[in-house]
Length: 151
Image 1 (tube, rainbow, N blue to C red):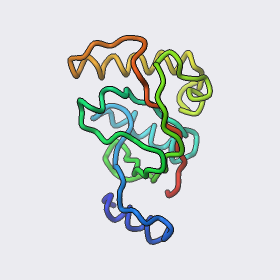
Image 2 (tube, rainbow, N blue to C red):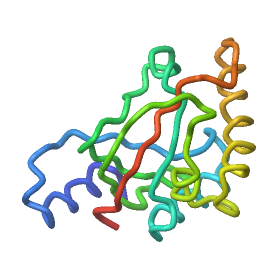
Image 3 (cartoon, rainbow, N blue to C red):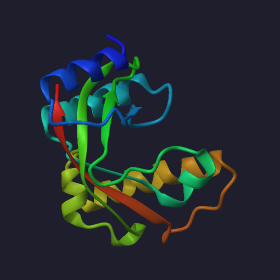
Image 4 (cartoon, one colour):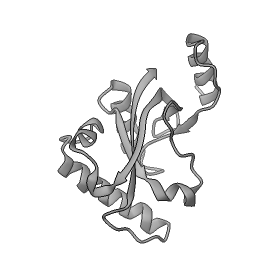
């Protein structure tokens, strides 16, 4: 099913949603089908209720920055819709100040802050390197909390 049809099905079942504004994305690196599938499933199952991104890279990539109340269609590794989320809270903080609660809510691996830092520092380093930017431990991180509203 394409994202337009998926969104229209959601809207028909949720007439209280009056916007057509939404984003479509897969979490992880482009082309990493296995990881993208795994992350999409964690979201759909309700295990993953948070995510994070490098705040200052939005200006470079031109991606839409998430905001509280916004809707997004989560895609799997084959760019197929898996579920729709609604942003509950979006805030920024330095990388090393991301909380243990946020790390747990990201739902990955052992759900510890140590694991979160290990995985995300590597992820952010690659993103910065790919864009020709210098990575440091105090980059601003956008921390998102969301809920699944349709699957």
